[in-house]
Every structure is written in structure tokens, then in C-alpha cells.
Amino acid sequence: MKTILTTLVVCLAGAAAAKLPAPSDEAKAKAAEAAAKTAWTAKVADYQACKAMDKVAAAYLAEAKKAGKEVKPTATPPCADPGPFVYAPSASAPASAASAVAAKK
Image (cartoon, rainbow, N blue to C red; front, side, top):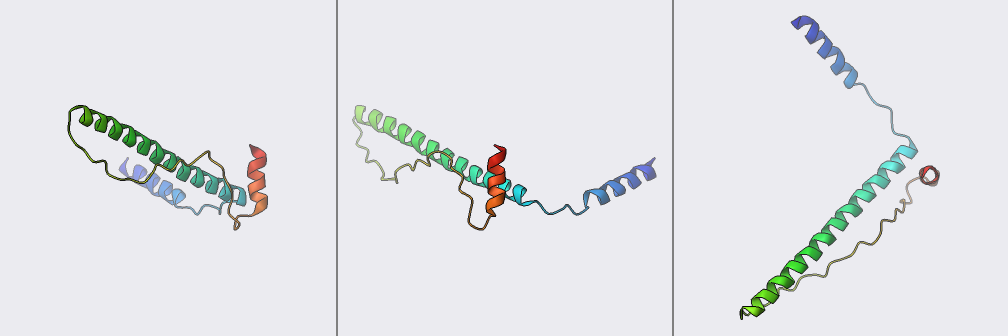
């Protein structure tokens, strides 16, 4: 039983190590768009966290002022709204691949 199992594992490992074909231009364009959307999502998360921190800081300052404590707020950069997601393919990407991805939507 052990021999059969070992042989099966070795065969499956060889199949898993097989070289995959290179991705098509359309797949590359779709991957680039997914990467851009992921980066935009991270910017949105940062923006939302910044707004939440501003809200908490404002509430803390109001409470401290009510309690008679003098608290000086720390200057921080303003929250940068990333805006809506707009994908603009880079110039190095083939235009035909980008249009093919857009046509499928």
C-alpha cells in the first residue's frame, strides 16, 4: 500500500511541476487590470481609515475640551480621496488586448 501511495504522489508531483503555457495578451491585460483594482482598493481602505481616525480624533478633542483639558491636535496630512476606479492601461500593453477585455464586459 505504501509503495502504491508513494508512486501516486511522485506521479502527481511530476504533473504539478509541468510547465504552464505563457499567458495570452488578454490574460495579461486582465491581470494588469486586477492589479490596478487591488491597488485602488488599498487606497480606498487607507482613505476610509484616515476618515475614521479623523472622526475619533475630533470626538476625543471635543471630550477633552468638555473636561477642561488642553489638548493640542497634531498636524496630519489631509485624507486623499482616491475617487472612483478608472482603469487606464499602460502604453506598453497592447491596445488590442485592452480592447478585447473591454469588449467582453
